[in-house]
Structure formats: C-alpha cells, structure tokens
Amino acid sequence: MSLVTRAYGETQEKAINELYAKFKVLEDGIKDLFPDGTQFDGKNVGLLDILLCSTFCPYKVLEEVLGLKIIDPEKNPLIFCWVTALIEVQVVKELMPPHEKLVEVLGIFRNYALNPPAV
Image 1: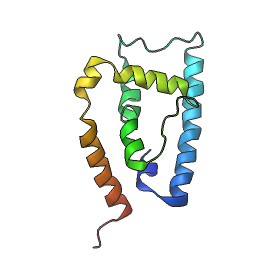
Image 2: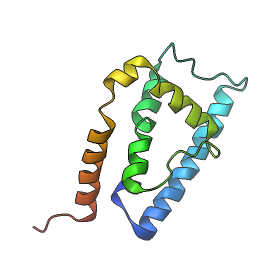
Image 3: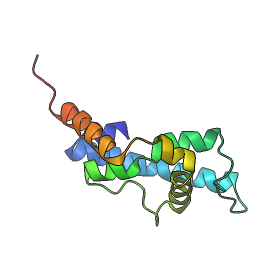
Image 4: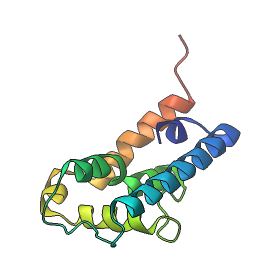
C-alpha cells in the first residue's frame, strides 16, 4: 500500500495490481483458515485482528486520498467483512484517529512523495 501511495501513473498501476494479487492470496488464506465460514465475531480481538485493523481499517482514507477503490466487497468479501466488523468494535472506534485528520496526513505524505523538495 505504501508504494501505491507514493507512486503515480504506470508505477502506481503496477503497484495496485500487485496489491490486488496479494489481497487474493490473503482472501484465499482466510478461506483456508476458516473453512467453515467462521468470521470475526467482534468480541474477541486477537493478534491477527490487530494486524488486519492496523493495515486495512483506514482503507477509506486511502480511497479518498488516492481516488482508488482499495477493498472491493465483491472481489474481497472476506477481507471486507472482517475489516467492516473490526471498524465497529468500540475500542477500535475509540483508538482510530479522526478520518479527516488521517486524510490530511496522508495527503501531505502523498504530496511530499510525489513532489519532494529540492535540495
């Protein structure tokens, strides 16, 4: 996701395609881990949930700043459902920075990455 944020044009398109390929691997891994369809229940947050949350919960910020669809519920239904459930957990709501603040920070980061200051 970092390269998607820092790149543009063909480089960004290639990074997006690689990201989607990795999402497919993750989606398949979730199917393997939970063959009976077990999903995150919203009650017991574990290490994997924390990892997914820290990586994917701000996906709407990325979508807004980059103007791209990051997590597609049709292509990645298990990831989307899991992340959506995580976002609704009270402790996650309390700990996530405000959406507007994240958009501002990521916008600054992206602008800096695309237009580094002259030395």
